[in-house]
Image (cartoon, rainbow, N blue to C red; front, top):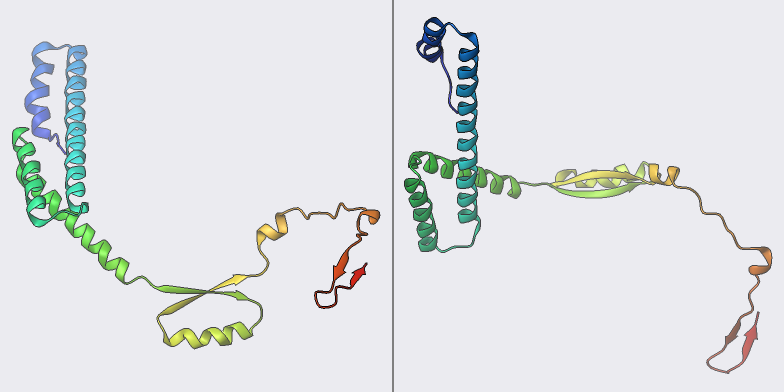
Length: 179
């Protein structure tokens, strides 16, 4: 990021105030310089995002060492052609590789969880058996908010609809029962 210090203000802005004596011109000039600085900062952010994308793509694709080196040389060539400092690109690559290596290490140390439905205090005694292992215990309740909030379905069948006539046939003697 570009930082404007007090020397810039006193050496560039103050002479305009004393020589021209016009506040309007000074304010317009300051506003223009501010807009240029913001635009330059945004361009720097956009360029860094583009290089970050290229480096992430290079590191995430399953490339051989030669192809990865070729891709890295292409990224450095693009930076040199655009007059972008290569030390910034190299620094960005080391940051991304360090971040990726930290993510790999954290994924390896993830805990395993077992979920038990809590029925009674006996479940606590059962889960005490897992304390010596690397398995973490989580409890789930039988009664949930969803069961409380969800409307109950009412039985819409009439009394005369409940009577059903059916016939069961025995497979050994072929006799039937009608009920």
